[in-house]
Length: 130
Image (tube, rainbow, N blue to C red; front, side, top):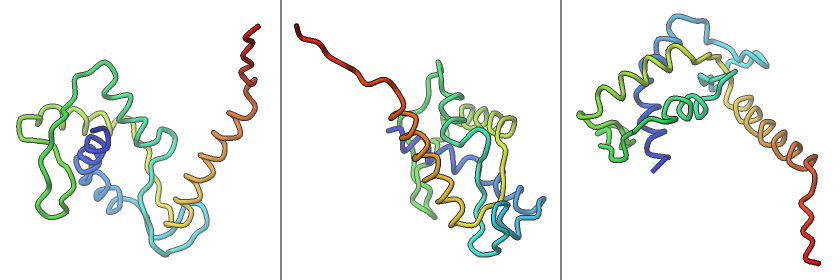
């Protein structure tokens, strides 16, 4: 499923996220300055969009193994080249920032609210059966 692909892609970039934490000041939230429950967040192009752009017009894995430590889906050994290509693509296109858990959640809710508002602005579909 698509969820499994996203999980495998997230696991594939775990080292990039770890390196970002080490090489950058991730001690406080980029939005509010909080030092509690800091998470690494994608901004500009969101993670799901990076995955979507990468797999567009590309054959991608549909079967996955499980990581023995986390039980999260991971790429199979035979999909090594796909995984490496994704890692390189992510490294080129991702912009990361440190956010506290609360701001990260708020950011996602604000994004969903904006989508909802944009949809409400669209012309209503009027069906005429005369």
